[in-house]
Image (cartoon, rainbow, N blue to C red):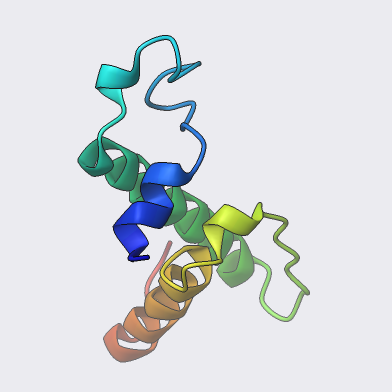
Length: 93
């Protein structure tokens, strides 16, 4: 089973359609993937901004398993944001 098969078997995304069973033509692999990465990126950017604004504080992010189980979700996007911030030097968020 390939990753695309796993995505296709996953439940619908509320950003695509409230109930994909009612309109399955809207749920394509491209739309599903696009909505997932958009939401993951938004979560990661907001978490990073909160962590940066509260330097030294503990940040706890609660997310569903679908945001982390494939290894390219929120966690990897947070890591990327931290690396970009380190390489670009001090800046305001």
